[in-house]
Image 1 (cartoon, helix red, strand yellow):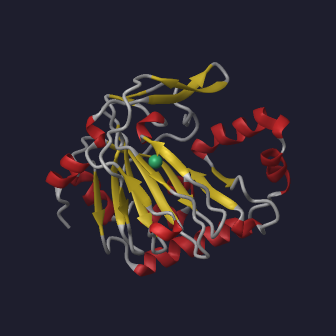
Image 2: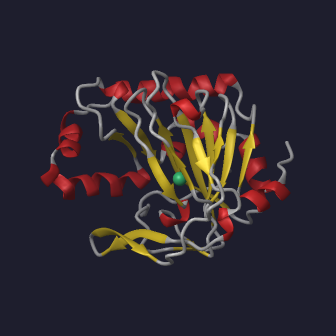
Length: 269
Ligand code: FE2
C-alpha cells in the first residue's frame, strides 16, 4: 500500500481503510479479553477510586511505560471490570506476543517507513475500550504534548477494532492543524506530573472533521495534529488499538512521563 503522503502533509492525518485484516482485529480483541480476565483489579481499583491515593495512582501510571497496566473509566462505578476499563497500556507491543506480532507485522513496518522515519522506534501502545455508554471524552490535544522529542517526531497509528462513527465516539481532527505550534507539554518536574502551556495560539477555527473508521481502518495521526473524540453514549463498544512511533534520531525529552529504564525501545525488527 502506498500512502498518500501529499494528503498527509496537507491534512496531518490519513485514513487507510481495510488496513488490518479481520483475523488480526479478532486476535487483538481476544487477547485483550484474556489480559482483562487475568487482571486482579482489587488493589488497583481502590487506587483509582480513592482521591487521597493520588501519589500511588501517579506511580501506577508512570511505571506503565514499560509494563501492561489497566486504567478505569472515570464514570465506571458498578460495571464489571471488562466493561469498566478505559485502556490497557503502554508496552503491549513489547511484552505481549499477540500485540507484538501484529504491531511489528511487515505491513506496519512498510507504512511507517513510507512516512519517512530514519530510525523508527515503537514507543507506546494502548488498547482503548471506549466502552458503551460510559466511554469518556478525550479533549482536543496534540500527542506531542505527552510524548516529546526534539524535533517533534511522534506519530500515532490508530486502528479501529470496532466500527467507529459519530455515534460511538470516533476520532475528530482539525485538518491542517499540525502546521501550528505545540501548545502544551505534560511532563515530569521532580516527582510531579505537570502541564505547561508553551504557546497560547488557539486551535485553528476550521471545522472539525469526523474520522469515521470501519473496523480494520488505520488512521495515521501527525504528532502535532489537534484531535479529540466524543464520549461514547451509544450501546456499542468502540475498541481501538493505538501505537505511537518516534524517530530515534531525535532527542527524547528526559522529562517525558514515559521512561523505560529497564526495557530498551525497539524498532520493527
Ligand atoms: Fe491522541
